[in-house]
Structure formats: structure tokens, C-alpha cells
Image (cartoon, rainbow, N blue to C red; front, side, top):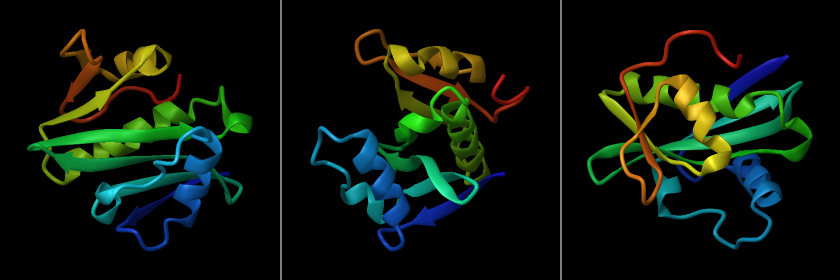
Length: 137
């Protein structure tokens, strides 16, 4: 069974940080000041933390970042589910648009959700409005 939980602030981020540490093993930047106020979603499979991403507000825009899924859960479309959850969260708290910097590995997933490129340099993508359609196909 798949479930999700929301965390805001630096309290109770143990699952978020354990996933980041496993996926982003080559970096020491597992947390930053955005974790003080960002919304972190954690996706669980049978109560095992499988993936996470966060929604933050900076420079007047809502951004999704820190998207990561543990290796043993790759290929299950959990990245898409997490992005959809965060876009929905952004819309429910007042966002007209949600942004995400993307690389080639996530670009197709974002396009399937309705994101479009806003910049060729940084691969910044934007989604207007809420998510629709079928998830994780």
C-alpha cells in the first residue's frame, strides 16, 4: 500500500533526510534554510520511506525541488506522483503557477503533467494551474 505524509519545518524530517542521504550520497547539502518552512512530502510503500520532494516559496514563486526516490523504488512512477502531490499542494495554498528546475531525467515526466519550459539555460519548467488527467501512466 502506498501512502504519503506531509512535514513542514525542520522537526520530524528524519525520513526526508534519510531518503536524501541515500539518493544524494555525493553531497553534504541535505538540508538548508528552506526546510524551516517548506512542505516536504514523503511517499511510503508499506510504511517504508520510498521517496520525497518539497515545495517552497522563494522570489515570489512556488518551486518543487529535492525530488528523489530510493533506487529500489525506481521505475514505479513515484517521481510523477510526488510532483503531482506538490503541484496540488501549491494550488491549494494559492499558487497560479508551480516551477521546477529539471534535467533530462525528469523532463518527460514534467511534460506529461503539463509543465512547459520557460528557459533553455537552466531547464526551468512551469505548470499553470492544477494537475489533471491520469497519474503515473
